[in-house]
Image (tube, rainbow, N blue to C red; front, side, top):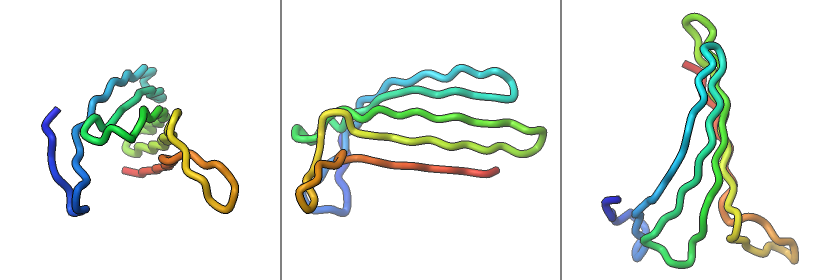
Length: 89
């Protein structure tokens, strides 16, 4: 809950988040949400992910999408936050 400044002038980060993970040994399912409460115009973001643990290799895929914030680009409405992340370790 610590408010921190960023390299972007006038943009601060203070994140409230909640999440859970269901670990089924070889498979992990994750769900969560977060909000940057330092910026009043940003809404909640939903997150989801899946992880595979195969002996000495772990593969993770996760995504995030804003649920009430949109931007318009060339007449089409898009979520303000849309992320996809993949990792191999």
